[in-house]
View (cartoon, rainbow, N blue to C red):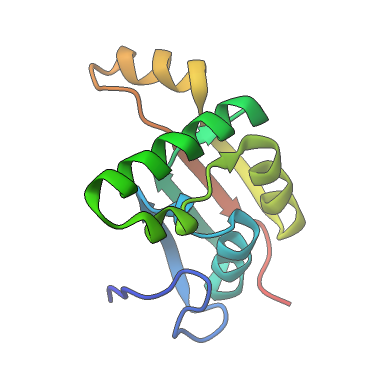
Length: 137
């Protein structure tokens, strides 16, 4: 089954999903909210996979990304959409995963992501793979 919904409030029962996949979208909600909701719907052993959501190791890079996003949406004629962009802080992501019982299996962001993706002949993308160690409680 495939579900398309607000990642902060999924129309799914607790502990019923095997994989939560975020394709170029995890940065459109506060990371703690999205990870918390994924933890609720995933079964024990379920996976969170996120590809191509901007992740940054420092506040300066996040601020620059936020400014780029605001300029992009303003130029496109929809400046209000910039309010929905949340550049992901890698430390906040790690904390949200740990707080919800996820084991981090792989996280590629920043320079590490650039090297990893170049090694497989692709443009730079972020990548997250985490496994829920226990069920929702």
